[in-house]
Length: 87
Image (cartoon, rainbow, N blue to C red; front, side, top):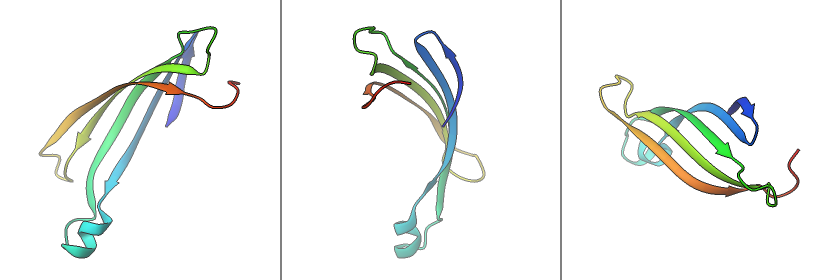
């Protein structure tokens, strides 16, 4: 994850990764790499009295195979809490 912008009480980030299937590759001789994804998201800190609490939203396109013939767009909405002090 790479933070790209901070605007007031919001934090914007991007990231990406690879989904590996180690057990399936060993046991069933499946492909080791299951898919690829990119992520774009935000964390919003709405409460001044509780600055560690955030509302998080992320959207993440996911490609199921190396040919790029199938995939999905995933999204998450949640609540987060940062333990410790906010810098």
